Length: 219
Image (cartoon, rainbow, N blue to C red):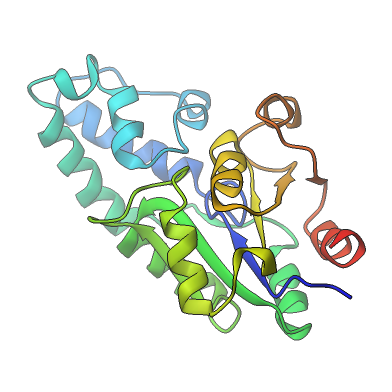
């Protein structure tokens, strides 16, 4: 009998394509301060550990730069307004979430994106399917620490033995490991299968609906 009762998803690169909006807001802030802007590929390999870490990787000398906090605030203000200009669910994701919901699974999002943007995007695209969405906020450690996952489990009323995690990066693989649950790694996100395998990933979904088959066939 399938023991999984809840599926916990990463957001960026797993459920939503968000790179272009992240790049535009990053470059807006960098350009405003006369700093070199970033390509989409550079942004892709600098995301995953939260927006502050993204900006540390994009600003020369990171947070040691005297202008860093100002640049970061400009990024946040811009992204809060423009986080959905070019973003949207990957093909097949709405159908996946509806299928899981119809089968009775509880669904959560845990993200290193700041809380307001996480909740806004979850409400916009996944209303009626996602039960709880948790982003970065003060007082709770970011992934790969298990804190956001633990908070999601508490709200959902499930144990780690009843959960499976779905993500697209080494951060997600380590988050699942630190939370004591299996991780399904997706092939369509911000990191390649090879990169995820090197990080310890060993369960892969090539298409969104593969996740249903994996959960019901292996767990």
